[in-house]
Image (cartoon, rainbow, N blue to C red):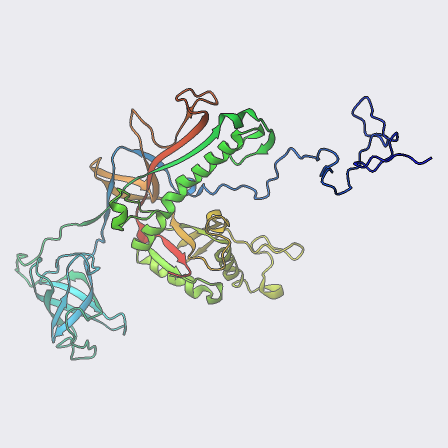
Length: 486
């Protein structure tokens, strides 16, 4: 006898027997595969993994400033500090304007140590030509007053009759076109002379300032969504683990905001666009901007150049503060360039790698990752900077503008305008707004009518984050920024 067939299931009537419990049996199987639009896309509920997969590892980017700096409160809209200028008297871009005449500009744009002429009659100078390597010692016969610009001094060489006549000759040029450098190395006076002609040298300083910016972030969820609880097992970057529901997103908002606290003082720029300043958006000077303006820049550093490129960095550090200990924070490519440069210096066995150095041996896999080294009188410590490698920020591109930065270790001495005294501070430190009434280092509060908050009739929970801060980069002349396009 032919069986009657269910047109929806394609199975004969009588062959399906419902079970009294949730059991998987061959007698209660429904097969909806006729393609008529009445089929279920899944026969059973899907298998769900409760644990969240950490496919990007630790996603946070902050930590750089915690390693090299500190955080201190402030109460004003602006931070002002002063940095000492050089001790000795020197002038650049000096021109020979006569047989025994030197002229040079003395203003804020000339790039000289002193913005007034403080060279006096009776002092002795060294004249140097960076382009030719020539030098000459001279005696200052007369000098213009401090406020005269350009300054003019007449000199008498010790070993020849004129600047442009003798063994060492400097061609006569117009004021502003010369490239000579002069510096005072002492003085000489005849017996019984007075010192009335000497100019008094008043120590000068350079003043810098920076202003904080207000940083905000918010996370919101409606009351209806909070009623639909979905549990997820997580292990977050801030050390918490376990089961979370809708506040999982709030946790990530907090982590992202904490990264912003560091990123904004690294990337910050002072606003010069009048369209911004008209909106009261002033900006703040971040680390990269400060080093570009007042520090040192190295373009396209590569291991192929060997030590020649690196030694030029050392020569630049010698002309600045000569801080003995320094830290490299580099992206992956530049970090490997440093490893390759150092590894190429080892000339022992087997392909240029010396066994016994850097914990290498013939029986082990070679360790060519260098975390520290010494060159000349400097110690360097190297680490990868995640911020430069992360694909969501400066990483993941074939060409990057910032490859790394060299940060001096230790502290600097500056004059604090508020305290009226010299203080020691880390070269990098963050200042945040705070008072007895309000601490704006990291504010966090909840508004709405959901999640325990009862502050308004809004059917949602809003989690707010706020901070007001800026970065102080002191002694930026001791920093080195590694770039590939600046």
